[in-house]
Amino acid sequence: MKLTPRNFRKLAREEIAKEGQSKKLIKKCHELNVIQEEAMSYYGEQDGQDRARGIAGEIRTNTLDNLLELLVRFEVNASLNGSKVLWAENGDEAVSLIGQIIKQHNIKRVSKSKSSLLEEINISEYIKTKTDASIYHNNLGDFINEELKSPPFHLNNPILNLELEEIVATLHKSIGIPLTDNPSDVASYVNDYFRSHNLKADMSITGVNQAIASTGSILIVENAGNIRIATANSKVQVAVMSIENLCDNLGDAFFINDLATRNSTGQTISSYLSIINGPKLEGEKDGPSELYVIILDNGRLDAYLAEEHREVLRCIKCGRCATVCPVFKRIGAYPYGNPYPGPIGNILMPLILGLNETKHLYQACTLCGACSEICPVQVPHVDLIMNYRNLKANGDRKLDATVNVWNKMLFQSYARAISKRSYYDRSIIGMRAYLNNNANGDYIENLSGPIQSWFITRDFPVLPEHTFQHYWKTKGHLLNEEGE
Image (cartoon, rainbow, N blue to C red; front, side):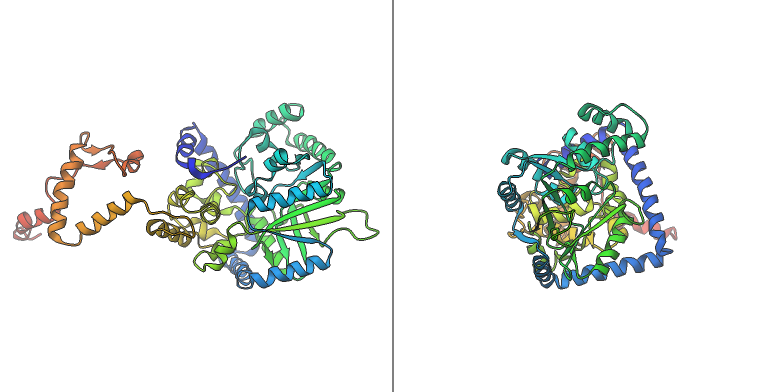
């Protein structure tokens, strides 16, 4: 489905209006945070956890400082392993490459794994409409979202918002599983269904959790085992990774994966961790005969080259920031209109779609800093969002940011009004008359014009007849005479 953040305000109001929605989401986020905090306790008290985050931050710093060199090393080593490395400048180029591979190998059945990057390029829609192949989702969350025609609700918990009965009802309608309230039965039925399709797939399309430059390998983690089955049995595997999604060596990759797992699902380790070095060798029974690795840019290289945006690329997509974000816990994922709901989408999507298209995302942030505080790799979300707001206010061609004329006029007027005492006094007189004429009793509840949206959730008290300065000049001596 085509996602857009343009409808953020409308969808946010709709989500807030749903009875019990926010309370349920706050409860689910709290439960997930408890599990994640328990998993992080492996590193000890807060000091030990901070040291672990510091190490992970240094690993990501090393990756970003040497990104271009690491990408070249990965391509060389992956090619030596027999993989075919392809580069895509944007999403359209990435899906076009996948389409060519499907046509070249006469692919009829595709197994798709859960990956935010695959959602970013909208690969499912492309395969359905532009190729002759059929596509099957091998992740329960992805499958449910596809059936409900809804975007993922969380990076690693795409159906976080659904209760068991809603999941069962959807599966009963789509694939005919019996109605049950037993989670184990649901898992058994779903696994049988997915595996029957995975065993028949000609091609598997996966994401990449980490690519390893020193070996040319790709690391993929999962909990159900469906990716492993699909990649082991399909003749072609296509792995799509973004340019920053790699480490120097296996040790770094394992450490990052450990923190990512503890901060996403709250596990100490994922149930399945696969390191794929390349296509299967002669005499090997499992694995694809052809392995393609597509390295996607989609605005990330520009971010890397611009020092003020580079820190966005530290993210390891654990999704921990969303579950502590007060905005996400209030409105959920759907208003964000992108595969990265929450703080990470607020800082990543402007680099992909531009600042005009995503203005509601970074403007909705409260700047509380909870995301930066909890981030396992020390992403400075608040600094990045403040920079976006500054660029939007002043205009920026590279990130497609045009100045809001009304805002500019408003703040220019404000700057002039406070530049001299006489200007300020005259401005207060005019503002008092305008505001108080629109009052309802003691409060102004609505105003027309560019500041109308400010009053959606706020009221403003009427302005008093005189300013404090006037009061002090006329009556301040009375306080002094009384000795106060």
